[in-house]
Each structure stands twice: as C-alpha cells, then as structure tokens.
Image (cartoon, rainbow, N blue to C red; front, side, top):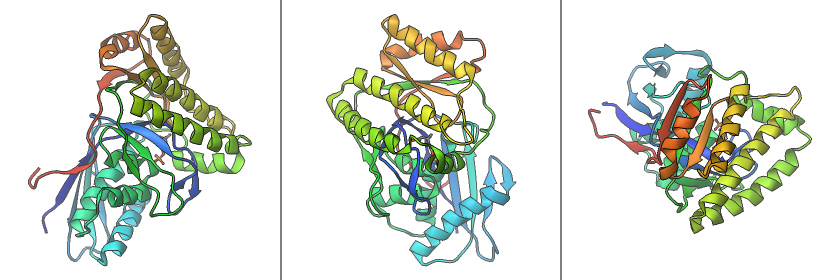
Length: 324
Ligand code: PMV
C-alpha cells in the first residue's frame, strides 16, 4: 500500500495545559487555549506494510527504537483497535523544529500522526474525532488539529475532551530560542510530579478555569490587550507551579527571564507584546502583526538569544496529496 502523508504545526498555549486527571485517556485537569503556528511543521507518512513483525519509526532520517518507538507503537495500537486492523506500519516523520526543545514538537508530531495513521487504517473521523485521537498521543496535540486559535475542552471522558476553533483577532508570535537542547525533565514526568507534590495544585486548577473563561471572552471580543495580559500571567503561574514541586523543576533560564524583561520594556515603549514559555527555556512573544518586526529586532539584540523567528497563525493538521 502507498504511504499516506500529513502535515501539522505546533501550537503555543496562551492558557496552559498542565496536569492530567486521567493518565491513560490523557484528560486534562482544566481546559486550555492555544495558537497554532505557521512554522516548525512536522510531516509524517504512514505506510502499512505486510509481513512486518513490529512497527518501524524513522524520525528525522534515523531509525528509532526504545521509548520513542514504544510511544508511537502504543498510539498505532489504539488506531488499530478503533479500525479493527492488525497490520504493522512504517512511520517516517520529519520535524522542522528541534525535537524536545520546548517548541512543542510532540503536538505537531502526534497531530500529523493521528491524521496520517487514521487515513492509512481507513478510519473515517470528523474534526472532533481527530482531535480526540491526537490527544491520546500527546495532550497538546489535540489543539494542533485546529486552524489558528483553539480551545481544548477538558471534558469528563474520552468523548467530551477535544479542541475546536475560537474566533480571535489577528496575532502572531516572535519565538526567541535561548537554548536548543533537549529538556531535563519531560512534560509528562513533570506533570505527574506536579499533581502528586505541589501544594498549590488545586488553586492552579480553579485559576486556570477562571482564566480560560476570560480568555475565550477576550478572543471573541477581539480584545488583544486582555489576551496578552492573561497569556503572560498564566504562563508565569504555570512556571511558579512547576517550581513548587518536590523535587523542584525550573525550565526558565536566566536568558528566558531577560526576554520577559525585554518584553515588559517593549510595552513601556508602546509595543503591545506579551511573553509566554512552555516546558522549556525558549520564549514565545505574542504580538499583533504590526508589532512583530520591532519585537524581533529588540529580542535579537539580547546576547545569548540564539535565534529569533517571526511566525503567524497557521493551519490545523491536514493530509497532503499523494506523492508529496
Ligand atoms: O502535550 P504535552 O504533554 O507535551 O504537554 C504540553 C504542556 C505545555 O506545552 C507546557 C503547555 C501547553 O498547554 O501546551
């Protein structure tokens, strides 16, 4: 059989997902909201091949085994159980962003895999079904199925936990890479540690629900200033929460904090820019299109900022025509 190929982009959360209430189904403790980007794509093809004893994974041109293969294979097992199929597959995936560097390659990776694998195994899923499927690979992947701004409803079971689009004003991001290396503690492990050890966890859940409601209202109203304020405040709350675990985890580096300070400086000079960071040291700065160039120039001037990239709102995961 010929390969089915899909392409997906990472998303950066403006209201963060941090903590699961069901580890197997990947049900989050609260909803979240993100912007799908138009850069750092993952392109993944899935080819069913008869006679293979186990799935094969090629990531960025290298054959992978161990934990990476096990995670992809477990995901394919779920797809096979939905499709009533048993054949193994060859998965080839290419990332345009460094894997595990905090640029959410697991989101684009599992969104592309959900799209390609469901088509390869003949599943006929609607947008909600695809988002639910991607969620089973990596929670944040549920949001990369959606164009632009996506709200992921926490839900109470497999059925009700999915992402969908929210209308929002034009906005983009300036991504400042301060350290391209892999992160010390995976988000999966760090979330588990947070749920088990942080004394602030219940406050995090209730404050995230409150922020999400305000964020959805601000997006619908096109109120960029409120969107920005909530984005930066929520990111700092997440990092404070993560720092409150036992043993503590700190993802932000001194350079990351410098970028947050530079962004506050931009605001003082009248440029509406707001910083956020995922489970890693890199900083994503939310801007209106007219503020992108000045923000990028200001961040590029900081010593130790390796790369600055202006990105816009991007499309949800989609299949590519045959032969791509
Ligand atoms: O989907 P995961 O397990 O890679 O978790 C992502 C968590 C954050 O990126 C830190 C926040 C988010 O909402 O994307």
